[in-house]
Amino acid sequence: HYSFFRGYPRWPASQTHLTYGFLPGTNANAISAVVRAFNKWAAQTHFTFSQTQDYRNAHMKISFHRGNHGDEDPFDGPGGTLAHAWAPTDGRFHYDADESWSVVPVPGAFDVETVALHEIGHLLGLGHSSVQNAIMYPTINPGMTKGLHGDDIQGIRALY
Ligand code: TQI
Ligand code: CA
Ligand code: ZN
Figure: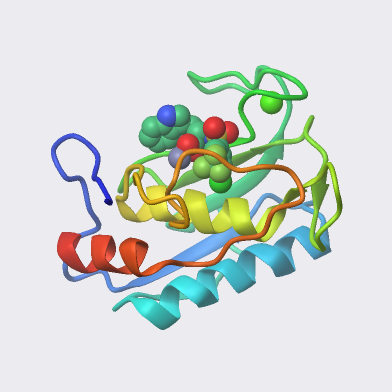
């Protein structure tokens, strides 16, 4: 079953359109995969999302970093943490650049789109789910791709 962050942080009801931007220099194939993930969330929620070139002013900011990258949660090299994102309305979403990433299923590499679906769930206010096939389930294996599950959609609809 889905869960939320403590205090149920969420985007204001008036903000159904949210922008996202990528740190300049982000790999184009990774951008395409994250765009697909936003489109999948948009198809199942009241949100619309659009990519902006104005990274600094985007509601949600996506970037790749390694190790200590200036926030309160340094990355840990290969293994361990793959990515992190903050609860509403912070908007930061970071990938650990020290992991193996792929935009097509490759054994041993993590799927950029699948991880984006999960982290966008956090950006929108979802916590983790106990349903194994839900995108918000807190475990994933390399080479695995997942999509949105009924439990994820019910969670977002319950929050908003
Ligand atoms: N990163 C954790 C995550 O996004 C960060 C985290 C730990 C967290 N506890 C949290 C975030 C509680 C919000 C609330 O879950 S991770 C997966 C999954 C990670 C894990 O690197 O462990 C994905 C990142 F679910 F597949 F295991 C992305 Cl998809
Ligand atoms: Ca790591
Ligand atoms: Zn998570």
